[in-house]
Length: 117
Length: 106
Image (cartoon, rainbow over all chains, first blue to last red; front, side, top):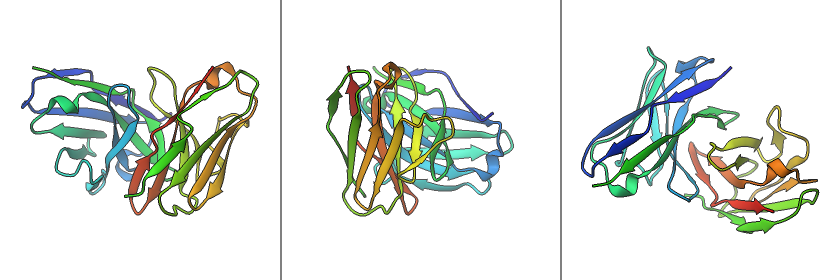
C-alpha cells in the first residue's frame, strides 16, 4: 500500500529557515514524481512544484519559483520542501503528493507550518 | 498559466439529490482534467482523472464529463458523506493548477 508520511508541525519566526519532509513507501520511490501542494488557512489548494527523485529533475509553479526549494533523497525515499527565510504568509498546511495517472493520487497527511513573531 | 474557474461557489442540496459542479478552463486542456474531494481536516482525494475516468474504489455515483474548456462533475443521489469541497485540476506541459473549489453543503 502506498503511504506518504510527513514530518510534524513546525512553529517558526519570520526570517528563520525550515525544511519539512515526506517519506514514501509501498512503491518505487525513485521512479515516481512527487510534489508539494499548499493550503492556506480556510483557502483552496495550490500546486507548488514536483521532483523526479531518480535524477532530481524539478519543476516549479511560477508562483513558487525562487520562494522554496524542493529536493529528494532516493537513498532514503524522502522528499523535502525548504524555505531559506520564512514569512508570515508562508503559514499553511503543506501536503506532499505522489503523481499517478498524471495527477496527484496519493497525499500525505499534511504538515502545518506556523510562522509568527 | 491556465486558470480554472469553478461554479457555483456553494451548492446547497439534500441527501438523495443530484449535484452538478462546473469547471471552466481559460484555454483548452483537452481532457487533462481531474476532480478531487476534500473533507474538513483531511487531505484531498482524487476522484476522477482525464475528465471521465473514476479512480479505483470511487463509487459509481461520481461521474465526470467534458473536454476542451468546459467540464462537469456529477454526483447522483448524494450520500451524507459526499458533503465536502470539490476541486478541479488541470495538467498541461508539466504544470498543474487547481480551481478555487465548490462547497457542497446540506
